[in-house]
Image (cartoon, rainbow, N blue to C red; front, top):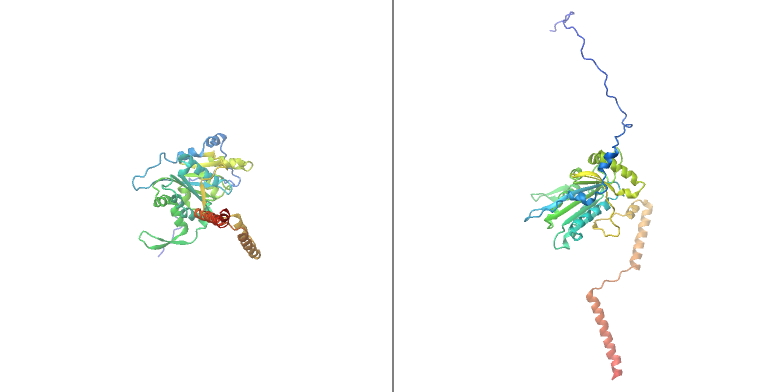
Length: 364
């Protein structure tokens, strides 16, 4: 049974000693907030006019390279990411890396493959690096151009064998990325025991890509800083640092008026970071990288954009032109060395027979 409360209670409320003070924190409109612009001295410290790609690679590649003793795998592995929007020179930058390796080890000891939006093609054509040579190359460069779209094309699953020999399904993207990360093992299977392998991935975007690509990068080369405020721009700024990021952004703005400014490249590695110039490889010099895999041309894109009612007409016209081309342009059959000798011998016998049949009776 509840006891009735007394009207005269002993609890007397006392005034609190806690005084509410006005807060000094004021809200700021983020749209009007401006980032701190680095000083000219800070920008000058990260801008290197005399730095070249060979010097940066010197800090990442041991000299001499590790030597295999017996059956161990002594291949030195580097993972390089080239980030930038289209038409900023990512392919020429990877060719510059290949030529830097050629200057270091000799052109005959460096082999490079390039695939565009086709990651499996690199590994399916890797045997071409070893078939024509008695010993494996000293340095191998594999360049995956437009890795962003190459990963999007890897949909579906593949059937693989596990360690127990049982078949199981595996996502295609995981299957080929495992080969990308375990490139030392892939080369070891093909007889390479020592040397250098450099995996170069060109990315248009970081968003939605495999996080291990940028987490395990030994060298990041940036050709464009991305749209301000986006995921990619924020990631690039955090990886480069605000000073290097702003310096690269200034050169990127200058490149809108002068194409020569596209040679400026921001880099970050364990050895340091900054902005330097990478000249375009000479046009007259033959490139070291060999293109493998499917090539997506602009003609294929144009066919996809044709209206449905015109696509059939276009396909019929293309088939007709192809047939006419086969009829009008027929290559001469290839004759080998013994075929030419047989024709010459037959001609000589015919001449001797005619001389014996018609000329010799007149001389007797």
